[in-house]
Image (cartoon, rainbow, N blue to C red; front, side, top):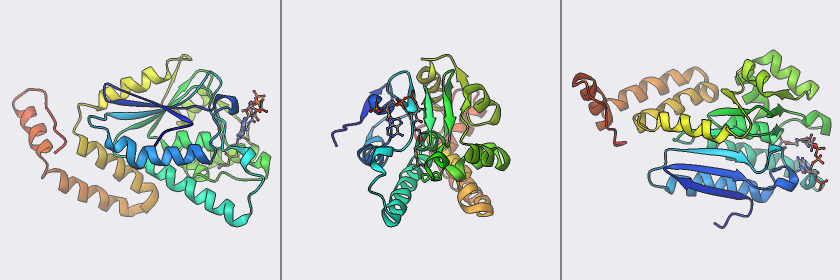
Length: 260
Ligand code: CAA
C-alpha cells in the first residue's frame, strides 16, 4: 500500500510511524485509519528483524487531535456505530501486536488521539503533550475504546472526571496518573521510545508476545486471563528460547534468543 497519511521509517529494526496530516493536527480520517489497519495487519508483521513500532505525530503541535470531525457531518446511527466498531478493531490490532508498540506523544492527544496512544503498550509524553477525551463537547463519547482504556489506566473516578469535564491534562499529570510512562523534554519522545524498544529487543521474543497477551486478556477476558497465563507459561518451556535462557543463566553468559 502507498501511504498517503503515514510516513514510515524502518531503521535498525525499529519502525517509526509518523501520522502526517499536520494541517489537520494529524486528525484520523477514514484513509488514515485504513492505513493504520494495513500497517498493523500486513506491513509491520512482514518486516524481518522488527524490534518494535513507535507512533508519533507530524509537527510540534499534535500527536493526533482526534477523529476527523469534518467527516462527521454525514454520519447516521448505523454508520457511526460501524465507524466506532471499525476503530475499536483497528486499535485492538495495536494493543495485541506481538512486538512492543510505543506512542511518542509530542503534543495534543485528544479524543481518538488519546485512544490511539492508550491502545499502544506504553506512552512517552513530551513536556508539551496534552491528553483528553473532549467528545462530550461534540455531543459524543469516545468511540475507539477510550471509555474502557482510560478507566483501565487511571481508575474509574479520574476517568469519569476526564470524560465528563472534557478537561485536558498535561504531561506531568498524565505521568502522575499512570497514563504516561515517562515525561521527556520536547523532541526527545521518539529517542526515549527507541531506548525502551532496544532494552526489550534482546529478551525472548515469544515470552514478550505472551506477556502482552496475558496482560491484555485481564481486561478483555477477566479472570480467564489466569488461564492465558498458565497456558502461556506451559507453552514457553517447550521453546528453544527457554532452554537458551536457562542454559545461559547456568553457564553465567548472556542469552542469545532466536525467537523459536
Ligand atoms: N478533526 C478535524 N480537523 C481538526 C481536528 C479534528 N479532530 N482538530 C483540529 N483540526 C483542524 C482545525 O479544524 C484547523 O483546521 P483549519 O485551519 O482548516 O480550520 C487545524 O486543525 C488547526 O486547529 P485549530 O485552529 O483549532 O488549532 P488550535 O491551536 O486553535 O486548537 C485544538 C487546537 C485545541 C486541538 C483544537 O483544534 C481542537 O479542539 N480540536 C478538536 C479536538 C477534539 O474534539 N477531538 C475529538 C474528536 S472526536 C473523536 O475523536 C471521537 C472518537 O473517539 C472516535
